[in-house]
Image 1 (cartoon, rainbow, N blue to C red):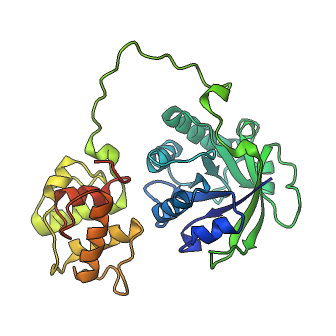
Image 2: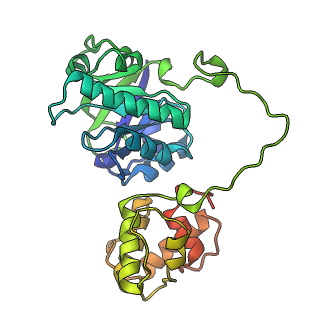
Length: 330
């Protein structure tokens, strides 16, 4: 059995060096929930775990109120440029809308099939013992199961093939100040290599190098409420006339003005919030709407990561770095 933890914003800052020293083999990081929501510490947790060489996985918390296919697309967009070797995970554990077993399972299958079409990966299912047993049907139980059942050495029978057992939600781990979920995993939690997977079709090598169509800016940038807030502010301050659609495309980029030390406005506050969501620390003042020395220093740190000129000024390339999915995307 392999020792693992799962984390989200609720666990705060994590010292992954200490976590690894404590014997943790696997960390599964919350990436997304519902539609247009990325866990605020997702990127910080990912970079920390990746830096120390712990095996990484990601999970998506299933919303009852939003479209399963769109949830799958958001999940894949958030993780597709990261390195991970653990099966992606669909977390399904609530039914506040009174759906029956088939209706809940239909939504899961829609998510799982859409995610597979986008990524090529099957997911595993995280759920609690009784919820999984009583609310998910045999179609969902064909996927590997990660079951929460506390205070026992082996999870209850649910119909899933078990690859993970979450046996506590109040554990203590060196390097994490909050209570942490503790898990035991089998080796089957790892993604199988292409040649080992019976479900993968052989890949035919092309006889010539195919042309690759460059991706549009919105395809390699974050999407959702953060971008909508930016578009609204650009429309309000500068009459940009942008469609508030949540996509950071070329029109939104062209409307972005240069922002530098001394600025005091809502646009500066949005820049600061975006830096915080990317995992940067702005000091005691945080997102206060004032572009001071702390903000300038943090912008320079971001520019360094993206190999930009470190002038502390938010110009076009820095705007792209702020709203890009990951390092080196531009």
